[in-house]
Length: 145
Image (cartoon, rainbow, N blue to C red; front, top):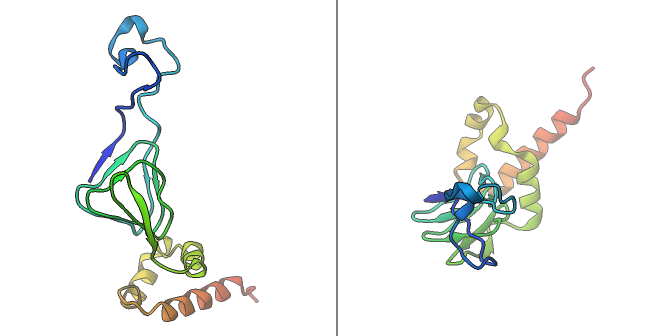
Protein backbone atom coordinates (compact mmCIF):
# COMPACT_ATOMS: atom_id res chain seq x y z
CA UNK A 1 0.00 0.00 0.00
CA UNK A 2 1.11 3.55 -0.72
CA UNK A 3 -0.34 6.72 0.74
CA UNK A 4 0.32 9.88 -1.27
CA UNK A 5 0.27 12.89 1.04
CA UNK A 6 1.38 15.44 -1.52
CA UNK A 7 2.09 15.80 -5.18
CA UNK A 8 -1.17 17.51 -6.12
CA UNK A 9 -0.98 19.63 -9.27
CA UNK A 10 -3.26 22.37 -10.59
CA UNK A 11 -4.69 21.17 -13.89
CA UNK A 12 -6.48 24.47 -14.56
CA UNK A 13 -3.21 26.46 -14.71
CA UNK A 14 -1.20 26.90 -17.90
CA UNK A 15 1.47 24.67 -16.35
CA UNK A 16 1.01 21.66 -14.12
CA UNK A 17 4.50 22.18 -12.68
CA UNK A 18 4.33 22.96 -8.93
CA UNK A 19 6.25 26.25 -9.13
CA UNK A 20 4.95 27.57 -5.74
CA UNK A 21 6.50 24.56 -3.99
CA UNK A 22 9.76 24.74 -5.93
CA UNK A 23 10.49 28.39 -6.80
CA UNK A 24 10.90 31.03 -4.10
CA UNK A 25 9.72 33.92 -6.34
CA UNK A 26 6.21 32.44 -6.49
CA UNK A 27 6.05 30.70 -3.11
CA UNK A 28 3.49 33.31 -1.99
CA UNK A 29 0.81 32.01 -4.38
CA UNK A 30 -2.00 31.15 -1.96
CA UNK A 31 -4.31 28.96 -4.03
CA UNK A 32 -1.70 26.27 -4.57
CA UNK A 33 -2.23 23.33 -2.25
CA UNK A 34 0.31 20.50 -2.57
CA UNK A 35 -2.03 18.22 -0.61
CA UNK A 36 -5.79 17.74 -0.31
CA UNK A 37 -5.41 16.94 3.40
CA UNK A 38 -4.85 14.03 5.73
CA UNK A 39 -5.58 10.41 4.91
CA UNK A 40 -7.77 8.83 7.59
CA UNK A 41 -8.01 5.05 7.82
CA UNK A 42 -10.72 3.68 10.08
CA UNK A 43 -10.46 0.69 12.38
CA UNK A 44 -10.76 -2.90 11.20
CA UNK A 45 -9.95 -2.10 7.55
CA UNK A 46 -8.24 -4.43 5.12
CA UNK A 47 -6.18 -2.60 2.53
CA UNK A 48 -4.77 -5.11 0.08
CA UNK A 49 -1.37 -5.13 -1.63
CA UNK A 50 -0.37 -2.30 -3.96
CA UNK A 51 -3.38 -0.11 -3.20
CA UNK A 52 -2.67 3.61 -3.58
CA UNK A 53 -4.54 6.17 -1.47
CA UNK A 54 -4.29 9.86 -2.38
CA UNK A 55 -4.35 12.77 0.06
CA UNK A 56 -7.64 13.90 1.56
CA UNK A 57 -9.29 10.46 1.49
CA UNK A 58 -11.06 8.76 4.40
CA UNK A 59 -11.37 4.97 4.50
CA UNK A 60 -14.36 4.09 6.69
CA UNK A 61 -14.32 1.52 9.50
CA UNK A 62 -14.47 -2.09 8.34
CA UNK A 63 -13.87 -1.27 4.68
CA UNK A 64 -11.97 -3.52 2.28
CA UNK A 65 -9.82 -1.97 -0.46
CA UNK A 66 -8.88 -4.43 -3.21
CA UNK A 67 -5.35 -5.12 -4.45
CA UNK A 68 -4.00 -2.45 -6.78
CA UNK A 69 -6.90 -0.07 -6.16
CA UNK A 70 -6.34 3.65 -6.81
CA UNK A 71 -8.39 5.32 -4.07
CA UNK A 72 -9.21 8.91 -5.04
CA UNK A 73 -12.49 9.33 -3.11
CA UNK A 74 -13.74 8.49 0.37
CA UNK A 75 -14.61 4.85 1.02
CA UNK A 76 -17.79 4.16 3.00
CA UNK A 77 -17.65 2.07 6.18
CA UNK A 78 -18.07 -1.67 5.59
CA UNK A 79 -17.87 -1.33 1.82
CA UNK A 80 -15.72 -3.35 -0.57
CA UNK A 81 -14.02 -1.27 -3.27
CA UNK A 82 -11.45 -1.88 -5.97
CA UNK A 83 -10.13 -0.89 -9.37
CA UNK A 84 -8.46 2.09 -10.99
CA UNK A 85 -10.07 4.41 -10.33
CA UNK A 86 -11.52 2.75 -7.24
CA UNK A 87 -15.22 1.87 -7.47
CA UNK A 88 -17.79 0.47 -5.08
CA UNK A 89 -18.19 -3.31 -5.46
CA UNK A 90 -20.54 -4.32 -2.65
CA UNK A 91 -21.49 -3.91 0.99
CA UNK A 92 -20.06 -6.37 3.50
CA UNK A 93 -23.28 -6.35 5.54
CA UNK A 94 -26.84 -5.06 5.37
CA UNK A 95 -27.41 -1.44 6.42
CA UNK A 96 -28.92 -2.24 9.84
CA UNK A 97 -25.93 -4.46 10.69
CA UNK A 98 -23.47 -1.80 9.51
CA UNK A 99 -25.21 0.78 11.70
CA UNK A 100 -25.04 -1.47 14.77
CA UNK A 101 -21.38 -2.29 14.20
CA UNK A 102 -20.50 1.38 13.82
CA UNK A 103 -22.50 2.27 16.92
CA UNK A 104 -20.82 -0.48 18.93
CA UNK A 105 -17.29 0.52 17.81
CA UNK A 106 -15.91 -2.70 19.29
CA UNK A 107 -12.34 -1.64 18.41
CA UNK A 108 -12.63 1.02 21.15
CA UNK A 109 -13.66 -1.46 23.84
CA UNK A 110 -11.24 -2.41 26.62
CA UNK A 111 -8.79 -5.05 25.35
CA UNK A 112 -9.98 -7.63 27.90
CA UNK A 113 -13.53 -7.34 26.55
CA UNK A 114 -12.33 -7.64 22.95
CA UNK A 115 -10.40 -10.77 23.93
CA UNK A 116 -13.52 -12.19 25.56
CA UNK A 117 -15.48 -11.93 22.28
CA UNK A 118 -12.57 -12.69 19.95
CA UNK A 119 -13.92 -16.16 19.08
CA UNK A 120 -17.18 -14.58 17.89
CA UNK A 121 -15.32 -11.81 16.04
CA UNK A 122 -13.37 -14.52 14.22
CA UNK A 123 -16.53 -16.20 12.96
CA UNK A 124 -19.40 -15.45 10.62
CA UNK A 125 -21.95 -15.77 13.46
CA UNK A 126 -23.23 -12.21 13.15
CA UNK A 127 -26.40 -13.04 15.12
CA UNK A 128 -24.33 -13.98 18.18
CA UNK A 129 -22.23 -10.83 17.95
CA UNK A 130 -25.25 -8.57 17.46
CA UNK A 131 -26.91 -10.23 20.47
CA UNK A 132 -23.79 -9.45 22.51
CA UNK A 133 -23.83 -5.83 21.29
CA UNK A 134 -27.51 -5.42 22.19
CA UNK A 135 -26.96 -6.97 25.64
CA UNK A 136 -23.94 -4.71 26.16
CA UNK A 137 -25.88 -1.59 25.12
CA UNK A 138 -28.78 -2.53 27.43
CA UNK A 139 -26.43 -2.98 30.40
CA UNK A 140 -24.82 0.41 29.75
CA UNK A 141 -28.26 2.10 29.71
CA UNK A 142 -29.31 0.55 33.05
CA UNK A 143 -29.24 3.15 35.85
CA UNK A 144 -27.04 2.26 38.81
CA UNK A 145 -28.98 1.67 42.07
